[in-house]
Length: 71
Image (cartoon, rainbow, N blue to C red; front, side, top):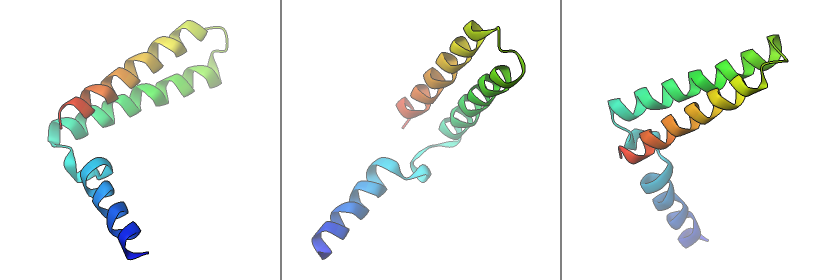
C-alpha cells in the first residue's frame, strides 16, 4: 500500500503540481482561463454567436497548451 502512495506522490510532484509552472506558465494558465470564462459569458448572454464560443475555447486551450510547453 505504501508503494502505491509513494508512486502517486511521485507522479503528482513530477506531472501535476502547479509549482512546476514558472511565472510565464502561470500567466498563460490565467490568460487561457479568462478566454474559457469569456466563452461561458458568450453562451449565457448571446446564444446566436456560437462561432465566437468555439473560437474563444480554441484560443484558451491553445494558450493552456503553450503554458504546458514552458515547463
